[in-house]
Amino acid sequence: MTTLSLAPLTGLPDGAAVRVLSPGQLAWQRFRRHKMAMAGLIVLAGLFVYVFAAGAFLSRGMCAPLGRELSGEAFANCNDTGIKLQAPSAAHPFGTDTIGQDILARTIYGGQISLLIGVSAALIEVILGTIVGSIAAYYGGWVDNVLMRFTEAMLNIPSLFLLIVAAKFLGGTIPELTLLGRTFSSSVVVIIVIIGFTSWMYLARIVRANILSLKEQDFISASRCLGVSNARMIVTHLLPNTLAPVIVTATLGIANAILSEAYVSFLGLGVKPPTASWGNMLENSYRYLESAPWLWVFPGLFVLITVLGVNFVGDGLRDALDPRSTRAL
Image (cartoon, rainbow, N blue to C red; front, top):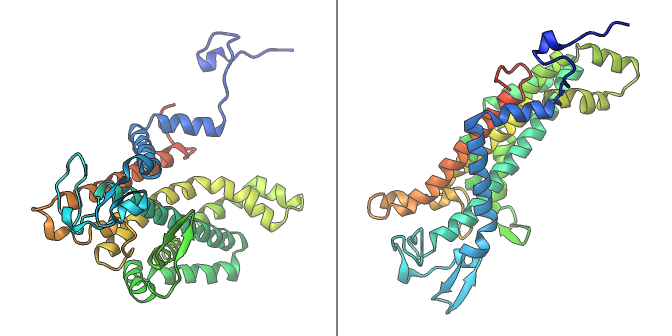
């Protein structure tokens, strides 16, 4: 029996062990070498710590109108007109707004709302886009024609205009939502649903294109010969092989949803007070661009770094999950 040596092919000494990396390990190595993606990941990690953990330490203080100390969201919503429009100080590191609310506390709890909207809307987008795209591609024929014509019709609907109209007329008709001990206004639910239901079309077309090419592969033909059901074929064989564009689209969808919420909240049609969001914190700040810049600098900065961080991570995931990526390992 002849033993073949890999030394001429690998450049390693004869007999040296060759480590075989899994696809996940290869993707992680590519991602680690994407400097901007790693920077975005670190920024997002710090942002999540600030938004979801810092409230216990930073959001507390005396509420003069009530005559007692408050903490958490109650302190963020405390109106004390005696300290309105105060510049950043030791007592209020981010200053106070036009009705005396602490901006630091409101950026914390407003960030929770903005991130909730972004993640929830992206989740709806991924679920709808994946289902529509996979079913259309796998079954083809009239099913594909109907679903793709519906997708093209949805693409013609101006999502931002629909979001503004829906927030205007439906914002007060839906009951409030209580989740994890917090009560969210009906406008939050409307924004999540509208953004999610008007942003899945591009993902559906991407998933459809990938599955159209995958279903002609030999492993799919072999699965059919073994009697694998259609549902199992889609869920266990096709969708896992188109996971990369789905993950990338989900990350970018979070950024787009946060920006869309900021748009409508800036126009006064988004998240309603006293619930804070980074968007509605900017609503009245344009009147104080020079006299009280802290009103727009801090919430605007959080929107900026969140969107940049998510986009950098999405860009890194796109390169890391692409099997044809030429990024060095």
